[in-house]
Image 1 (cartoon, helix red, strand yellow):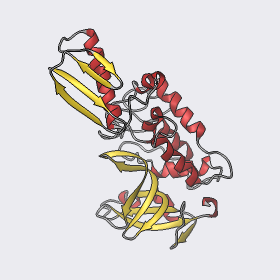
Image 2 (cartoon, one colour; image 1 turned 135 degrees about the horizontal axis):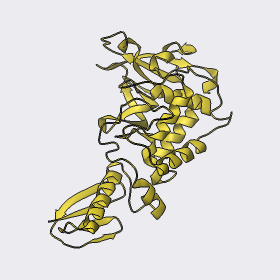
Image 3 (tube, helix red, strand yellow; image 1 turned 30 degrees about the vertical axis):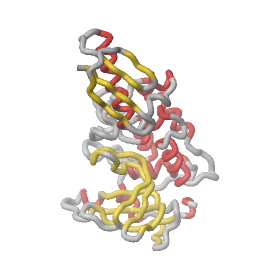
Image 4 (cartoon, one colour; image 1 turned 120 degrees about the vertical axis):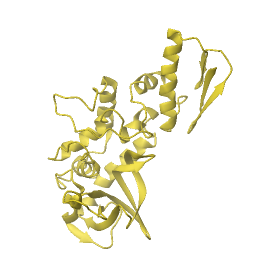
Amino acid sequence: MAFSLVLTENNSCLNLAGQRSHHQVHGRFEAGDGMTNDLIDRRAAMRRMVYLATAGLSVVGLNSQERSLSAHLPEGIGTEPDYDGSLPTPASVLGREKAHDPEIEIAKQIIARAPNDPRSTPYDVARYFLKVGDGIYGDAWRPYVQGWPVRWNPVIVTFFDATKTVPEGDVTSWCAAFVNWCFQRAQKGVATDSASSGSFRSFRALTTTPQIGDIVVFQRTHPMTQVEEHQGHVGFFVADRGNDVEVLGGNQIVGHERSHKICSRLFAKKSDVLTLNSYRTDPRLH
């Protein structure tokens, strides 16, 4: 039996068929039964194409260089749990295996293009990463706004440069690191210097009338330990939606319950997991 994969702009379709042909035309791939080296290579290509499809990418839209670069990405982005091991030291690797050179190069390009002048706000910087995730700068960049299985996304690792905290093990949430990095990238100085979302509970001034770009802080609804009392979430305020608040931030769940990305999404002001702690404001945010 042969496998037939048909990819479209925003979705994928994986079918079983009876053909024995070997060809790839505009995102369509079919492989026959024989276990040849050619088939092994084609099956590997098919797995990469499945990844691209599940990540919302289009094989048709990628040029040859982008196809080559995307082939290095780990499988399961957005559909499998993010890697949650400790951050690397300079002498170690990202996760269980070393980041590939093309991944590191793309990460550097993405970071270099982020707004970096006094006229920008931290919220402007955060919105830039939304555009990256939307494919405005090309499909090859889109997976770099979310966590990866197997190893750390080198863009996310960069966010921790804006903190003095290097979390370990399962304490690797990067929402606060993202907010801190957006502050520094916009040349607004230091926010909290901490990778803990709890550090923002006393950030600057409390406000009950948040504006777009202010800080939203959540806390654990039912903390069970002293450590959990300081845990929660932090991001940029987008809009009040009644019982919900729209938040633009990093490390926000999308797809798999243990898969996170930079996105704008709704959070209940009170749920079994998180409760709104406060809105914080600062002149540097506007």
